[in-house]
Length: 365
Image 1 (cartoon, rainbow, N blue to C red):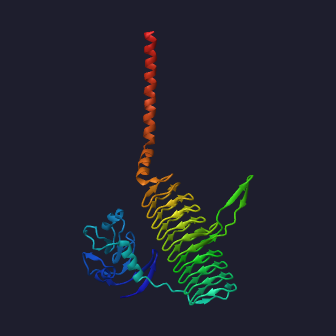
Image 2 (image 1 turned 30 degrees about the vertical axis):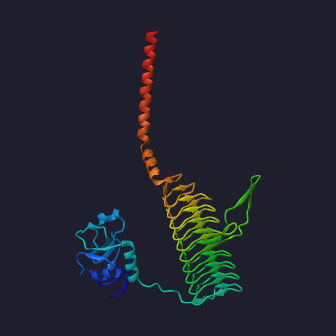
Image 3 (image 1 turned 180 degrees about the horizontal axis):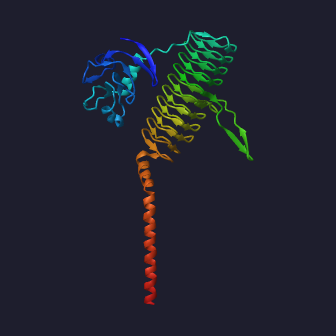
């Protein structure tokens, strides 16, 4: 295969020059159509040109099958035959991701070594093959595992532990006594272990409550840009294995997030709340403190969760309710202008009836 990689106005697009039958073997798909078509590039369905392969995972985009210029489309197994050549797979998104990963250029891993401008404190433990880029600061008693990369301007506080094969992107701040597991990615601008927001108010004066706990992040977690995760007041704020956190998320002190959960951009979780396994908090959702979100629950975008959510429940709205209830309420809200007109009309008819009754009483008297 030809691995001449190229970039265009839409980003990376590899020149792969491979038959569709070979691609189907790579992703374990079933071809419906011309298996001999030559695929030369990978692209999104709207941007795709002749010779490209693309994919459709969301049913609402199925209509684009008939308009895309792509030569082949990766689809789910439920898609019916069309006039386009398709490759049916169990999971189109995963199959497409595997294809892109196979043909995309391997990002060059930074060479191991410590830049001369880095500041390394006393009794710091550094693993094998680590990369410490310019202006990194690692304070006393910290440790960094094998094959970990600390990119330019990262800060690691005293007695903090970072595991193996982690990537800490530029300008990440990891405060003191934090523990980071293996295979963790933290993107630029994130702050891990900042003080929890705690004050005692006496006679209108706010006195700071010391936050003496820590943050513990388990293996295979990814944390987006400008995320803030506060240290616990006592004990630890805990992000468990496999959880993925999008950009601009706020996680307060003593929060516990279960394994393989997804927290989407601009969500906020208040202190001491427990999030179960496999939970999804959609964008801009907010969760009050000291409640529990059960395993595999779903919180819709912009929902405001004010009480605990049972396992597997889907909630939306503010305050958050079971999604079926919230939809009915929203449907009624959309009809409020019509209801208002109806009430005004009924009020007018009642007024007319009352006036007529008054006239009848006057005649009777």
